[in-house]
Length: 225
Ligand code: CA
Image (cartoon, rainbow, N blue to C red; front, side, top):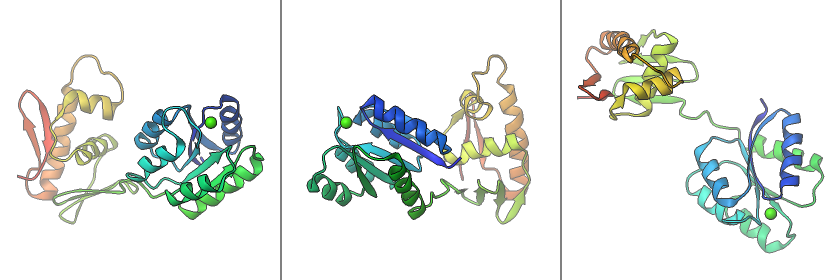
């Protein structure tokens, strides 16, 4: 996959055309049609790039950009029908990487997308998760505790990852089932207990102490006592 791109554009014909061209180039594409859902989507998902129309219903593109920049530095290319200096200047001031004026040739847009993606290679999100002596390298799928390597199965790794992404938060069995097993599990939730028992015994051995705690009637929590 070449990258994941969000299109925020209320003109359906343009959005559809750009989407098809991007998919053809191997990009994964999401679309939204107004400023507010565009902002929500941009904050909720990890995109490599956002194509952001300026004239949008709800929030304007510039307002979406301003709010996005408080939280994320996802590359943004502004799409503008208004070929005015003011919009470009304020857009770039607010942290847009580039802009393109409609109507544009698709080749030019694709070239600008490639440039924006090259300028800012996507960072691996949450590559290193830690809690106390535990370190998880999610890219290499390696876990260490106090410097000692811990060999985990895929499922155990995913259970530990959910713990590390939610440090000191009590997680229910249902949460593990939906996030790790990935479906609405019907029936016994014992499977979670079984995997947590495996994981706990491996971690306890490597760490020399217990970090996974049972909260009776609720679930489990990873924390340092
Ligand atoms: Ca528009």
